[in-house]
Structures are given as C-alpha cells and as structure tokens.
Image 1: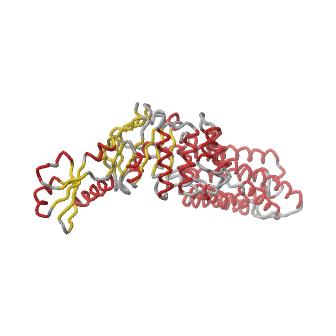
Image 2 (image 1 turned 60 degrees about the horizontal axis):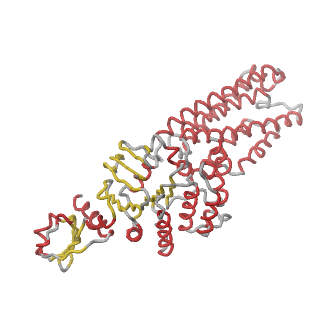
Image 3 (image 1 turned 30 degrees about the vertical axis):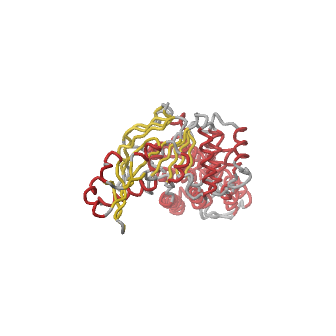
Length: 284
Length: 217
C-alpha cells in the first residue's frame, strides 16, 4: 500500500513553478526529499497538506484523495516544520491540552511515554526547548494521535550532529513495525545516507529522480578525466568542474562507456545535488 | 468548532484582553465624556494587539495543520471577536448605569449613556466588523490596513453622530435631553442596533470565508 502518492502536481508562481511533480512512498518506509534551498521542497509539502492550492494534479494519502478526505486524513498525518515555531511562550502542557482535543485517537499514555523517552518536561515553555527538542515535541504530538504518515520539513536542519543522529535513530525505530511512513525534506544529505530507504530529488521545481536509495545513487557515476578527454564526452555529462588535473563530472550510468578509459566512481548524494545545480547554472 | 473556539480563548487571546473591558469600561465614569471612545479603545488596542500576536505566534499555519476546515477557522476567530466586543459593550453599559446615577444633574455635551446610545455603539462596532474582518481575511495575516480603514470608518460614524447631536435639536434632545427618558424609543434603537450588528457581522463572516478559501498559507 502506498502511504503517499503524488501524481502530476503542478503549481505556478510568478517566479517559480512545480512542474509535473510525481512520486510515491511505500507504507512503512522513510523517504528523504532532497533539493537545494528554493528547489520546491516546502512548496511540495505545503501542497500535500493542502496549505496551498495546487493548479493541477492528484494527491493520495493512505489510498485516499487528500482534497476529498482532508479532515479525516489530517487525523492520520503528523507534520512538523523545522523552522517555524508556534506559541513559544506557552508551556508544553498548555499547548498539548489544546491540541489533543482535535484528535479522536489521542492516547494520553502514549503521549507521556514519548515525553519520558524524549526527555521532555511538560512544564517547560516551547521557547526554552532546543531545536532538537522542538522536533521531538512535534513527533510526540504526532505519534500520540496515531499518525501513520509523518511529513517533516527540514526536521534535522539546525541540529548538532549528536541530536541529528539521535533523531535519525528514532525515525528508523518508528518505521520498524511497518505502520508508520516518513517523508522528510532536508538539504543535509548525510542524514539520508544514514536512514532513508527512498530518495526523491527535486531541482528547480522538477523531480529529477525518485527511487530506492542504492538504485538512486547507482543511476549516476562520478567521472574523473584528463583535460584532453573532456571535449569528447562533455556532451554526455550532466555537469562538470575543471581542475588542475583535468575535470570531474557527473554522468548518467547509462551514458557511461567503460571503454573510455576514464576513472569512475559512485557519487554521494551531495555530489549529485551539486552537479545538478551546476547544470542549471550552465543553461542560464 | 468548539475545540477551535477553546483554542482561541486559551492560546490566541492574551488574558490581558479579558481584563481590558473592565479598564476601558471604567472610562464611563468620566462625567460628560465622549463615550464612543470607550468602545473605540477596543478597536484601537485590543484588535491590533491580538492580531499582531496571531502573526508572531504563526497562528495561521499552526491552526491550518490541525484537522479543521477553513470555514471553522474563520468562524472561531469571528466568534472570539464578537465575544470580546459583547464583553466590552456589556461591561461599559454597567459602568454607564453607575455613571448616570453618580451624576444625575449633569449637562451632557456628548451623548448620554442611554439605551439608544448603546444601540448606536452596536452600529459602530458593526461597521468595524464588516470592514476589519472582511479585509483581514484577504491575507489572514495583514492586520494593519484592515485596522486603519475600519477604525477610520468607525471614527467617522461616531463623529457624524455626535455632530448631528450638536447640530440637530431633535437628535440632541433624544440622546442628551428629555428624550433620553423615552424608554420605548431607546429600546427600539438598541434592538435595531443589535440587529445591524448581527447582520453586518454575518456578512463579514461570509465574505471572510470566501476570501480565506483562496488564501495560500
């Protein structure tokens, strides 16, 4: 079953547009949603949550069309925006007491368990929490109302490496039972190398690739060649950088010919992201 | 809807704004003052401060992520505004009753706090709601322009009413002189005022829903 199914999503702004965004997230898995700042991650997430009106396309969550079943589905979605804070001068207790009334499956025991596990003191004010603690608080809320799909926008940005690692471990534990699915956007690609099952890469409003992590990386090769070799294969490259020894470039695996006598290696996610953004600059 | 209203009353409205009606209402005790101002303070202070609070606390996105309809979001907010307005008017009325008994022989330069006067106050607040609520929901966060335009309109209404009270002997008599004793006329004005208040607020609510549906959060 698909936890999230996005088909041909389009949204046009004056200076930016989402173009035919489609991807699927299988239930019980973690999908990392990567892209540079301004690539369209938050716009996509806001469209999924129906916070902005899409121009066209369809969004299915847990098999149901989002627009038609918005209220019902919002009971099953937990969302957190890493960089937006709400009612920061209120205590956790006050905020939770207000929020829990909205959810019919709210479980107080689960909530207190998560507070304990995440070391959250309910008498603290939101403003007193560290960035990591705020994300954990959002998670505690989402999990206590029985959310099946967690949509997290940049949950790890602004966290120190220890807190990030800790959070990623929690993500992995959550999906273990196969009930919960997580879509989280980030530009910190090392997070995904640690915990994502699927990767969706968005660049300039378009989905470049969405697939299982190893397969995603395997789609590309990083090639290292000498300057004189560059002209012959330049057109096959997605983008390249020149250096004093020659050049380094990214290429689709299918375009790579082993007979070229050029060193090749598997790129990491960061390199894929960087070369794609370079490609765009070449065309400007 | 009930949960949303509770959310507004517990989180959205600072407790200070529940005390405000008692503070501004006490201004009714100033003899022969321009009593329209007592309620205008609600528009001058409570509204912009409350909505600034919503903006800084990211209330819009917070509320939108809850499992609620956009219609209910507007309904809850309009309800909160109306609850606070009624608090302001009722408490001012009580202070007004004390005021007329404290100074029985006063010559009023501006309107005396009679039932008819409160009817006019309802109309004034009705105008405020119609403009403020409908303008605010164009964006659901920009409260500045909506406040300026709605306050200007309410001041114009109050100013014209008081001007009529000085220029026109009938109006002057009705709201300051012997006419204040005509209970039926005054109750009629009060009821008419309440009806206008209800109608204008409902229109504002309808426009707000339509506009808010189009808002991108």
